[in-house]
Image 1 (cartoon, rainbow, N blue to C red):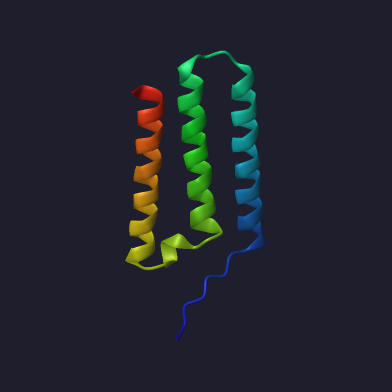
Image 2: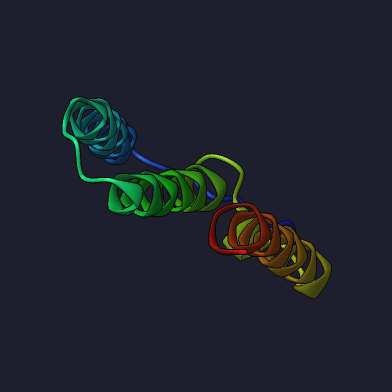
Length: 88
């Protein structure tokens, strides 16, 4: 039999509220002058948002190991680009 993932409307609502809050925090952070720390925090918030979308809406956690390997590679590439661009 095929596994089906049924997610309730309450779960979608909580994810939506969480993503909106992360967006508001990121937007509010842009008005503060924290130097390079604000960029690091904004990048961290973007990673958290992306992981929420991947896990809840795209069901990556239910896929096989190839999807997890692909996700890990994309995350490693994003971190490499971040550190070369901002730290180096």
